[in-house]
Length: 305
Image (tube, rainbow, N blue to C red; front, top):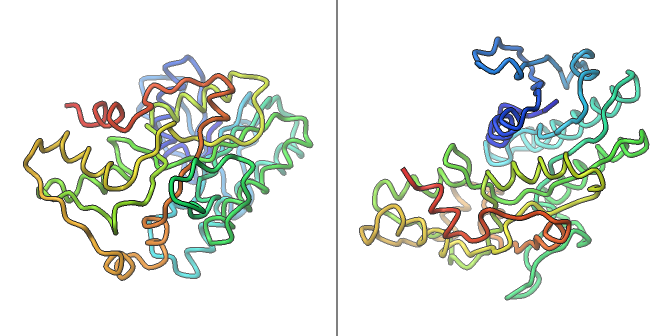
């Protein structure tokens, strides 16, 4: 059973699970008839505001993947939207926890999303990377991630295995961050943000899906893991590497000043301009193997026709 199954990660993960032979139930506010040729995909209704869930869907589930949450970069961070970002995560976790308490079920494990927004700015230049034991940052996203992670913790008291993936910047050809990098390149402009030195801890969508499967299938895997590729890059490197792969030599690098980003994006610009280097050591040590370790191999795959 997947929450947030209609988002960028959720859609890719559904496809991967179906190809692996899993039956997938996507929780949605609106149940739509699926045109899928695969009868293993279905939709069930839940309503986070009313704290209601399809009991039958819950009782079918062996595993719950919890991705639900309002998009952090989708809208300006007004007070109302900040509240929606937090509530959509915390209240959906509460519904899962309370439902597992209330109804008999066979759920073995819950795999929950979080984000590397948990961490703040790199403390020093050439920082080796935040590990999972690092303290939470006291900014808005740090606090959001703390509340998000805490809200699902109670499933452990119900004898369910819990694994939490702190997800980095997801690179996918179907949307998300990469689409924003590509937009100016369509005009021949490689838009380097700020000074371009800020570190980006990224992950290819295929590796992220593989990591969720790894978390499902490894019965000893529990706790918090950073879902990032082993080799973070700075903004300029990512931008120019992408430009070369898409345009060859036919692009113009332009720095977009920080103050312009702050005017355009408000509080969200902090996340775009800050340097966050995150370590993948723990998930590597657990036996996970990345298909795309470098930005070159990831972008080769994502830009091929």
